[in-house]
Length: 287
Image (cartoon, rainbow, N blue to C red; front, side, top):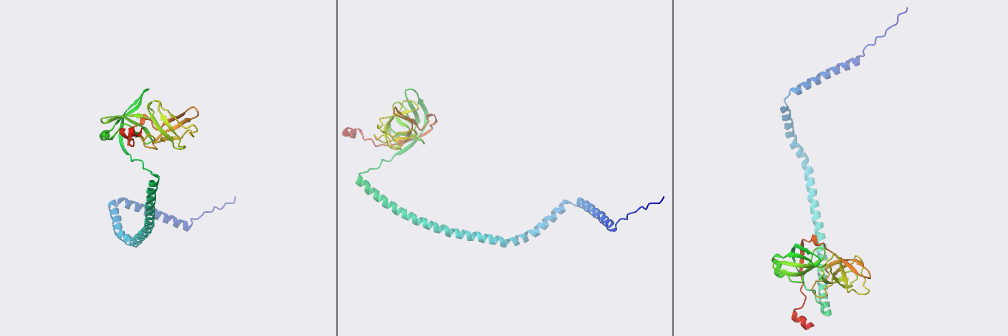
């Protein structure tokens, strides 16, 4: 039998050289790892700090021009903004002077027209605050008790009591540092009002309920649901234009309105001092 030839592949020289380099590299890496493990970390930290102290001033010197340019740009922008703002303020000041002159002219014209029409201004009002300390609601009366404090001597019967929504009631009795307020829902409450929208007048009467009736309205009054009722000022006891109620229902049978406040939520109220009623002697003369 003829013998087969067996081919023996000889290892390539380049591959053998690469393996040698790999072994040498692994040996060097292992040696470096051993050295790093043996070196004290404090020495490495000291070296890094030294490098930082050397390079930090150089970095700072390099960044100085950039910082200078940034600072200069900011200052230049501020100066330009000041000039722009100054021009704007000068224009606004000139407009205000014109408005001031116009207001003086209108004031002089208004004074002249008042004299021609025999018009008089509504007396100025003074207001005082009071704290609600008790609520008295029953079938016979709807009232609050107020603590007046130092303002007790300035409060009189008939003054209007309001909160942030509108009128709450009127001062009924003042005793010492306290006062009783009859709410607008009280059965004895009769307040002249006017519709803010249609300007139709009427008398708003309470009934010790959450709802009030509007009576003595004109036959063809234009009153609708949602219309706001305010004090008319008729009679001189209350200042005009105080919001007091909003119409809930308006038909041929009756006009029903609801107050703008909730008695149980009243804490601080304001009392409006409004004195335009004549004294007893003048009233007799007018009659």
